[in-house]
Image 1: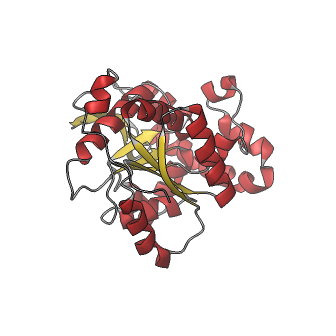
Image 2: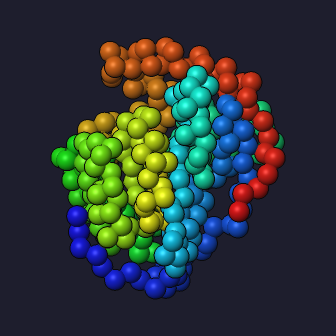
Image 3: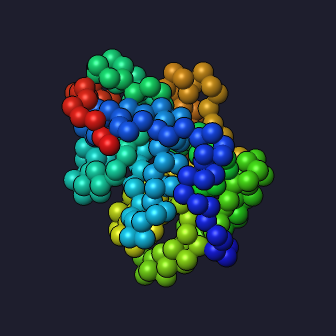
Length: 281
């Protein structure tokens, strides 16, 4: 854990770097049965800065929960009522999967602008955080992967403040102390890279304890940052076939997951996707 530092005055750094705030609201659609934001990666990054800078002036703030939806999440929400309830506690649910973007374009009047894979978004977020003075905390993965991800992000984005980090090997009994330690160093964005559904349950369970702007679930993101996990070629990502690339690399671990979840997700994307009915502030 790093020592606490003096926080920049709200909006001061952002103004100096020419930061433009996000729009006041954004559309939402029902995607595969889940409320999903119609946000681009750039729009998400600007909203993150706006929310986090505003949160600094509120000593009683609770972080916004930011979850990512993909085929796996849609299938789990369809099969497991407890998972669905937990997932729907999010303030922002963004489209991590390309198939979700395709479904929004085919079946709604307000399609999602682009896929916002967390493995891409963490780089968007790091870049704008370095420019605007936001402070990151990395939670999850092994100690080695967590430390290496922190090092790479800090070196790649000069000025990025990673004020604390902790591996993902802790029990629920450790969470009170962990939350206290996180609050002491005052991060703006807490990246939660734990297993599914653990990262969602941790976020919902500890939201009232943590003081930050955003609490973002990010799966195995730290391992992608370090290069331990590789991304599919760009053409496979664009075609919505990244799952196939991952399956080819890890067939034993992923075969049954995709064999079960992909058909369910496909069905729900086709039958539980509708146009926006509201705009969220």
